[in-house]
Image (tube, rainbow, N blue to C red; front, side, top):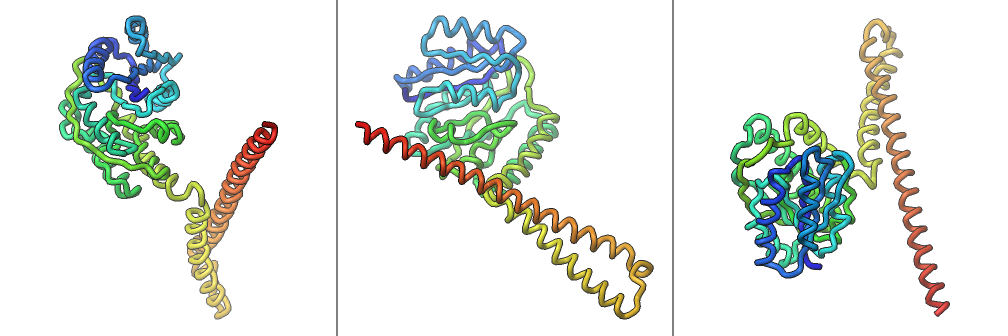
Length: 320
């Protein structure tokens, strides 16, 4: 299997049939070996029944039904798990993405890229305050913090090498930041311009309530990329800095006390601040040490599993 087209749906009954027909026409004209993975993310309308009818008439269609609305990331993970293609093309189910741009993604995949991101150059109907400004701020911060030169992390129109995408752990809302996470796996990433149209049916599921978690993830992802395997570099660095500043202030207070200065009366607030710095710094260093022990335990367990697998293979070869 060459290509798998994965599309998550949530209450998109008006879009199902048209999207299937449009994407099918493009894929049939471009590639002979492909499949569709349609994921119903707990829709409350007739989305699932319509997807079932499509699957009944086309054996290239696989429908994955989630019992409740888990969110886009979990829906995509379910689609990735059922995909059989060497490459996965992901698009939204609201008809805002133009299927005629799929060959552009295929071309970049064939050139050797592992992740191809669609960058929205036109965004009709998007609110300036609730969508465009938060999106631009978040994308700019993410690009600078991760060093990944992508202008649109949020776009749902992307393509991946299947082997790579299955190695990346996804949860929460991390599907937006797959390009940043893929850097840790040595992925080659590129970006192509795409044009979206205003939703012909229904309302957007993205709003201010989802923009806030997006900004939280902007902070989380760089931390995961830089410090997940060396937590002491983060906690220890801040902790040692706090202890150094606190130690310097403590030494000055001790010298002042030796000169006869009443520390409590003259420098009470500074004494409290120094104590907090020393204790907070010590706690952060301890957090770093605990994190290092957890990481070491994880790697030792992984090495033990690999060694046992090698031993199992060796024994199997001896038996032969």
